[in-house]
Amino acid sequence: MSKDSEFLWYITNDTRPGHRGDSVIENHNSLATLTEHARALEEHGWKGALIGTGWGRPDTFTVAAALAASTTTFEPLIAIRPGYWRPANFASAAATLDHLTGGRVRVNIVSGLDNLSAYGDQEGNQSERYARTKEFMRLVRRLWTEENVSYDREHFGVAESTVVPRIEIRGDRRHPKLYFGGASEAAERVAATEADVQLFWGEPLDGVGERISRLKALSCELDRDLPPLEFGLRITTLVRETTEQAWADAEAKVAEMAKGNGGSWSDHRRAVAVGQQRLFDLHRSGEVLDDNLYTAPGKYGGGGAGTTWLVGSAEDVARSLRKYQDLGITHFVLSDTPYLAEIKRQGNDLLPLLRG
Image (cartoon, rainbow, N blue to C red; front, side):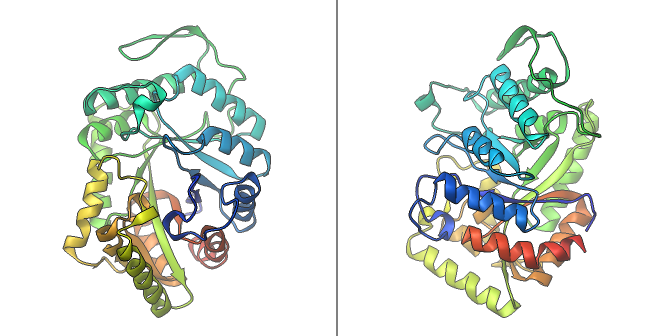
């Protein structure tokens, strides 16, 4: 794999134990437990982790700040929602954390539907939702890179706004990277012009390759004025010592899921977005696509990154991830349960193959 590829994990950030088959332990969401995960990520070769968001879960930014304070290299990929945050408030909070951590902040902008009324937010239809997201990303980036910013649009406005502390330029990093997901036409238009990294769910290689080509063309068509869009993959990787053991364990996990129709597996039940629906539909094309992309979890309620899994030995999974990298993927957000054990196993067995 390219030395430029980056490998992150996932921290669930959920008050309910047993997320996606994780070990049910006391204090699963305590600072001590989450810090243990973050420190294990540092020790086993991971760059950082995506921290999940949504109303009804602990506040992502607070968790990220606490974990960053307890680590030295761990980079939180902080999932946040426009509407829950105002752009200037968020730009200031992120700039402060970036300063305090020496440039370790990453941001994942989430536009999918949420329980908006619970925190006093409201959005219109899909096109309005993404129009707001586009404004949010544009304004936050300006606040990080310019001073005395004035901006007045449909959804947001500021006057003579300067965020402090200023983001320190580090090499070619001008500000925290803005990751973004979404497969609808409206989402892709936002990604093409405003995102730094477009994240894909675990679709087959052909589908990911087609979307990369489309987004590159769209970036040109819409006169993107930022550095070229980068691409990432968020997927479950079920790795075992042998191919046979991996498939036996994968099938056993799916059998357990089937008993409870997914239960604690899905964070994406409130509304099925375009990209999520595409994932749910994949099992109709076959239980195993490409070499080892397992689609059966999607039949039983696995949502998001839990819908499709790459299954096999470390060598099998590394070979598959290299094929995504050949398409242009450079950011990988992987996970499997039990989370802590798999941070160590995949850090020790999978990452060296991807870096070697």
